[in-house]
Each structure stands twice: as C-alpha cells, then as structure tokens.
Length: 204
Image 1 (cartoon, rainbow, N blue to C red):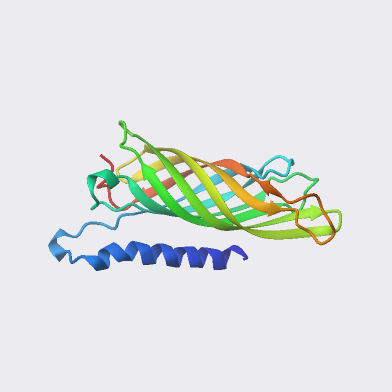
Image 2 (cartoon, rainbow, N blue to C red):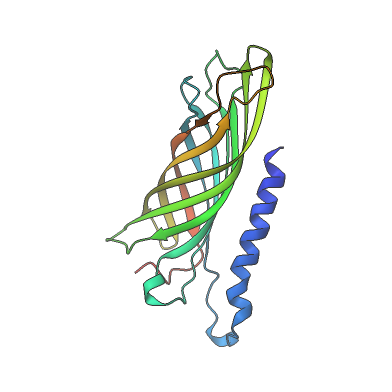
C-alpha cells in the first residue's frame, strides 16, 4: 500500500520525539505512571475538492500528551494520523482516492463535565488518484491541515471523538500536457471515532 512508507516514517518520528522526555529524566519505578498515549480509529467522510461529492474511509490516530509539563503547556501534545479515503466516490470519478499520513501539534482545553474541545495543526504527505482526459492520474503532495473537534468521555479511559479537518494540497494540475493552471486542493471533512487513553493525568 502506498501509505505504508509514509506512515512508518511518521510513526518513527513520533516515537523518537515521545521518547526524548523519558530519556531526559530518571523516574523511580515506584512513581511511574501509565504511558501518556491514546490510540483510536474512526470513520471519515470528506469532500475531496474534486467537485464530485464525497469520499468515505477510515482514520487511525495516535496521540501523545505529556502529563509532566509546566502549567502554561498543559494540554499540548502530538498527534500522528493516517487516513485512507477509498469508498463512496462518484461514478464520474471511478478512480478517485485520497490517502494521507500526517503528524503535528494538538492542544486540548480543560474538559467541561464529560466534554473536552481541542484544536490542531498538522503536516503530512498525501497521495491521490483520479481520472483525466488522458487516463488515470496520480499525484503526491506535502500537505498542511488545521482542524479541531470535541471528545466525549464515554467510560473511564474511552473517549468518543468528533473531528474536523481542513487541508491544503498545493500546486495541483501541473501536467506536461498543459492542464489548467496550478492550483490548490482543499479537502475537508469529518471523522467520528473512539480513542482509548492509557492514562488520564491531564483530563482535569
């Protein structure tokens, strides 16, 4: 699968960054807490910005939210995500597909009762397949995205997430056969899913 090398690289960088604070300080075994990670999956519905309806698919999340940080950094964390949109496409674009691996910063506000809002900024690498007048087309791009959402605490460590993301895929339609001028794709959509948090220190 084309997404696999991108996801492997993103995960490697994610775990390298996450391991750094642990290596920088010695924590007695008696005071160790559960890993500050959350892992989850969801179902996504996106407008691919091809004017052909929506694409459906799945999303995976891994969040790292450290608990031992200065008070003004409470709620700051990292997120790695992978998304494959390969279903629900229009008959006019039978090859349309978008997949993406991304990583970035996520900020979670203090929860109100069982609700906790968050915002994020992500950078990643995306692939898209589509149909052109010359046949099947394929492009890959470095992408950026902004988004946010809300999580609802359904159980002790289980949170239901509703996530929105607006993406930028730059310099599209650059083709040797003189396709329309280069522009920007702006896929956007919503993902609903569930995350399991291995610890709860910052959910106050």
